Image 1 (cartoon, rainbow, N blue to C red):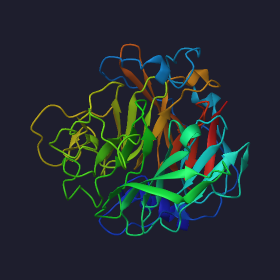
Image 2: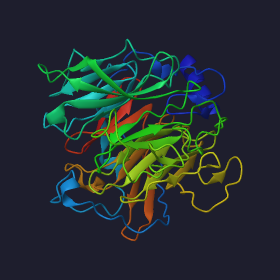
Image 3: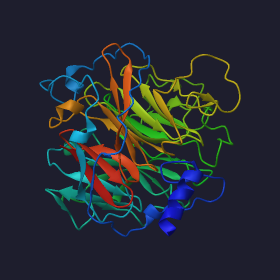
Length: 437
């Protein structure tokens, strides 16, 4: 009975981020924040779901391919899919359980096959050879604050030359609620442990409220580190952060961790020469909860959490010019929200959906594995509240197919891929699922 009441509350309240509904009151952790493991189960497509509805939208010209040396997957793979897969032929199989608020999954691209699971309270665990190791890879719970359900250890990325330098980068909120971007180094004697004493702080961003922290940390195909930060929280962006180029909030940042101390500024960042903060690469975002690059082509996909009506996926093709403005808080999705924008250069979402289908978008990943060729090139994304999983696929003429593929019972906090490009779903209640046939 109490569970039903909680589910009802989640859908009645407007989405604030992937972890909590929008409200000006202090955040209340969802039931999924409890550490109690749930029973073993396999999430399958709903037998009663209607066939996916496909939409076609006009989009810019096809992206320019990256140089061959930057492509992370073999060009010997079969070509991309031309239609969305028949979801009934596939399922999400649980491979890890008993986790405490997992919020992300990464790999080190070091040939080890390990998966690194981010727990929100401040631990990173290793799944290795089908076993969850007892000792954490990194434990920084002593410095991570989780006062509200949107704070904690939120992101992880391994340096492209991790096998040489042992560097990993994290995004966490400290005990004051402020965002820290920090670098750690793997232990010199144990590759399954990072050394918590090696922390080097790159950036600290003051957070005015306890929500909309963003949290993503990802290296782009250009070798720069990209950081996703929310607009600072509350509701309706009361401080106007998303459209201000004098704050790092409501932005995607882009920094060069291989030059400068603690980092350098890429020379083609839009404000590298002045007029705004030099770290800014894109702006006009509310709460970018998971961004990812297509590991073959280099396109960028952004899941930006809406206010109280519309969730959106934003898109930039590889080679797009820095300085994109995605419109918040002039717009929520395609729709006017607050104020009038003087100009015609706002970037439209690739797709939006309303709150009859969920309440908080979770940005996903493009499938570039080898086991499920029908999924080749499909961008897989979901919703935290409803557990819906959709697929987006670009047509040869530049238009897009979008369809509902799975109706799961998961609180989808993230998607991830392994070294081979196979896709995993992270359930905030404690489980990891693998997309398989």
